[in-house]
Structure formats: structure tokens, C-alpha cells
Length: 332
Image (cartoon, rainbow, N blue to C red; front, side, top):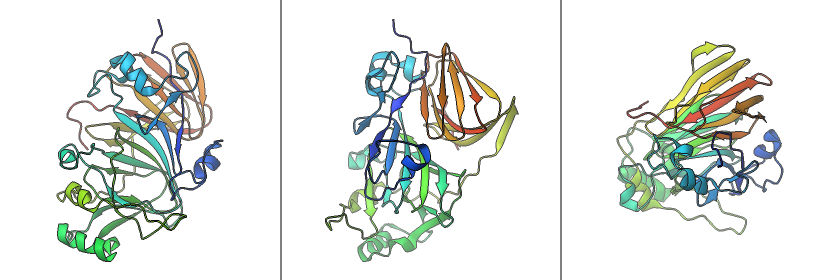
């Protein structure tokens, strides 16, 4: 019988959207990336880009197939549906601004027949003048935003946040947002690809064609009660054996922690959730049962919920991001 007690490594799925750049290949020493390379879907069970196991007994299997086959042994007992992997993990390289966009939340998704998408960004790299855009000004309302979209002045309503590497931003469904040029971010999100594009900075593709906008769906999806968020600078919660843990984001869908590692850290599993690992800087050895693998900068791994524990040991001083499904009633 095949065990789900070993780490899973996947082949990334790349997206060549016109605003992408070359940092994913350059900084993470990736081969086979498109030009431009806008996104790397690291761990995904979404039909628009399903992760395939790259090595081991389950090589060639899709993450969606594994969730259906193994259920809570993979996803954990906290998963909303045990046979459906609930989250999607990406690296996003914005050589140009992304469109101003909004995603549905659990309350309003039915209005547009979309799927809810709450997400968070962790800044891996940024230019000195890079910014993220999140939320609308206090005077914005449906009519003023509609008018500003029509005359091209909607940027005047956006909240601009200057960023530096190591910071994070929480983007709940219903919040208008955009990633500014020069940002490389790690994104954790609900397993959804519903995006309503409000404004695309008047740009065109190589053929001179503009991308379609979704004005009416956007205006139905914006949650006007949301306040603009602030950048998050993680602070250390506790330290043990050269492992410094910090909370990054905790919401009802996922919890993201940062691990600054110069020694080793043992992480217990109790079957409630998987653990998704991303190496933001440095390198580490991941040991799970009888398997040990090396993870370098930009690498991802998934520890199934059925694994009792795993150990992370610094190969160099490293910064890792670990994501789990949140316990009930978790809030920011």
C-alpha cells in the first residue's frame, strides 16, 4: 500500500501573462520558464494549472487525483472537503503592474457565479520604489468608482503601500487590489481562479489588443465595508534550537508562519492539516519519516496530513514559509 507519509515535490506550472518578468528563472535558477514568466503555480489542484508529482512513488500523479484518492490523509480533517485540495500557492513576478482587480468572497460569490478567493502576499523581492495597491479611499463609492473607471482616473481612489522584502499583505475577497511593478511575491490563496479585472492601465498586448474588463462583476463583488489593510511586518513569537517562528497571516482559510532557521525545527502533525513549505531564502534539509530532501531558495514541498511529524534543518541560514489550514474561528 502506498503511504502518504513522505514529502511531495511538484513540477511548477508556469503562466506567461504579458506583465511578467524574468526573476523566477533568475533568482531561483529555474529552467524551462516562458518569456515572460508571470507566475509559477507551485502547489495547485486547480484545473487551470494542476501540480504533478515530480519524483517518488507517486511520480506523475496530479494533486487533484491525490486528494480524491486519499482524502483527509492528504488534506487533513480541517479541510472543507477532504477530497478537494483547498489552497493554491504561487510565485508572482510583476515586471509591470498587474491589473486592478477584485475576487469574490464567500458571501457574494453567488452574485456573479464565481468562486471565492481570499489571498495573502509575502514580498520576496522588490525594487526601491515598488508598491502594492489595496483598497479604495474613504470617499469611494459605487458611482464614483464607476465614473473613474470610465474616465481612466480610478488610480486616484487606490491606496498605495510602499513595500520591502519580508513584509506581507492580507487581501480578503471583495477588496480591490493590484501588485505594482518590480514586486516578486509568494501568494497563498483559496483554490480559485475567479478574477474580475476592473482596470488594466490602458495597456495592450503585442497585437495592440486590450484585455477584457469585467466592470459590472467587479462592482457587484467589491465589499464596500472593507477598510484598506496595512502592510504586515512579522514579529517573532518564540525561538527554540535556532528556529525563530513568526505569525504572518491567520484567517479562517489558512495560517501562514515564517520560520527563520539557523538550527533545526521539528514540526508535529496530528492529521488535521497538511503543511505547505516554501523556501524564501537560504536552504534547508527536510526530513519526513525515512525521506530527506534538500530544498533551496524558491523550492516548495507539501507534507501530507498523514505524516506524524517532519524536521527542518538549516543547510544555510534560511527563511521558510509554512502554511496550514486554520483551526475553526481563526481570525486576523
